Length: 227
Image (cartoon, one colour):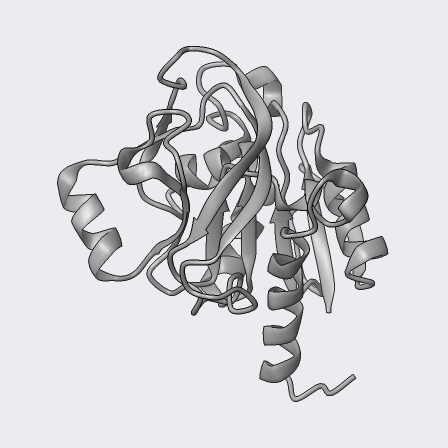
């Protein structure tokens, strides 16, 4: 399986994402600059955290119009796994690949620390390695991670089992403590916590590595690859 790590001007978690895939997951991975227009040859797409285009206007609002985003949307429509973390989640929201929006944290402060998440849905490409209701430790680092959606959207997310992760305690004011959601098809995940920063015990937790292993395992099963 070959992963693409999309790099925007201002991305700062791209190296973390690359390391998680190459050194911990032992899978093939390449950086893809935002000016590129094709993702042919890649099996999974990763949008890392950071401050794309300095977070001007809104977080992710300018990155959504980068040339590479047409290819990201195409990959999502083809059913390829697309993971957006933190700023990557914000870009997916701005691109319309996921519903809802991000607001400033409720306390208007940047939050950077490990947090406890609850696995709400372990039947996705990204979460099948976890147990339902499992509590995992993943760090966050955001100032604009307060997820919001209207009541109708929340009802749809709930009915379609699209809420994958919730904060055990609501750290930022997000609706229903939402930390991560998938699209209706289940192949696009956006989450504010950083699984790529939790892939080794030296980092304080390796709970995030299970997410990347889930993606790889699903791809191997889908393609009947045994090793």
